[in-house]
Each structure stands twice: as structure tokens, then as C-alpha cells.
Length: 223
Image (cartoon, rainbow, N blue to C red; front, side, top):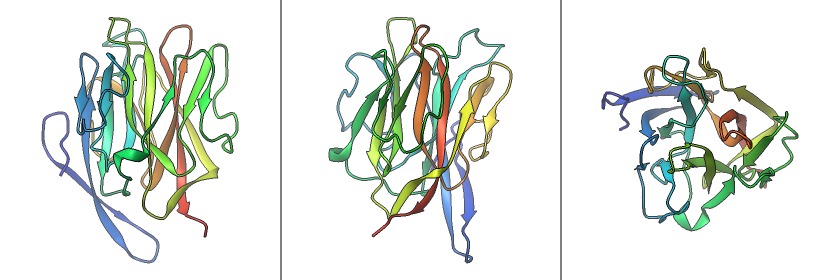
């Protein structure tokens, strides 16, 4: 079971077309001032930096930043994880993508230029992978550093023709799903919808602030 920011379990039942359903539980990992990792067997995948990471079998569904009451910059603060929404692969399939290399670092470009603007860089997982972790600099700047991607082992891929870019704001949440409730109180939350895959994160390369996340609908894996 997952836990919210008060440590309580939060469970939501997701209904699929055709009447099937599964129970998804949500839990946050708040890493603004240190590691918060549901799984650490993958080692220090961003050496020395603060890391938020879901249990390796669970994907991330949302990322939070400070709001106007708690800060003036959209630095990474926490992440929301979902247990039961899809099955992720073993740690040997993990891969990092950079948000601080000065250029976009994408394993999949079929989704097009889903975020743009001055100094905006995109980090994106492969078509059959999802974000399971994110890191930020531990030197006090809180600049975005990397995302951690894990392959989806169930028969599901991201649909590049059905994706949504959710831009962060200091004044409001930007959520397509509300699973987990207010999982990072007094912070702005971007969150993908039920059955969507969080597969990309963008940031401002000159300020280190987060800019948006990419949510894509899931689709059956082609054979």
C-alpha cells in the first residue's frame, strides 16, 4: 500500500473499458533536502545528488514544486508514485536522462517537440519506459539534474499521438488525475491521469527550474 504526506495509505480503484479494474495505491517521495527512495538497489545513479525514487516496480505519476507560498522558483520538491498501475521491469533495464547537459536528452522523439522556449531542455524515456526517479543538485541550488527511466514489463507502451504537456505553475496545480489527494501539501503538483505514462520532464537550463512534464496515454504493445 502507498502513503500520503501524512503517512496514510491512499488507494484508488481504476476501471478499464470492458469492466476490468485494478486497485492503485499512491505514495509520495519528498527529496528536496535529501534522498527519498522506495528502492535503493540500483545504487547511486546520480552521484552525490538528492534523489526521489519510487519502488523499482512502480512508476511515477506526478512531480511537485514549491508554490508562491513556499518559494519563488519551480525547483523539484517531491514525486508521486503509483503501485498497481503497471508493472515495471527489473533494475537492469534502468537508464538515466539528463536535465543539465545543456541540450535535450531524449530516448524517444516520436512525441515531437512537446516543450519549447528559451533555454528549455527535455529529458524523455523510451517509448516503452516510464519515469521512476528524479534528482536535483545537492549543493543548495536545487537545480534539476536527471530522470531515471525503467522499462515497462507489462504489454503497454506510450501512445505518441495522445500526449499532454503539463506546465508547472507557482499559483496552481496542473493535474489530469487526483490519485493520492494532496500528496505534497502547500506545493504545486503536476500529475498524469489514470492509465497515462509519465515519460518526460523538462527544465530551464539556465535556472535549473522545472518547466513541464509529459504524460502519454498507454496503448497495447504492438506484436
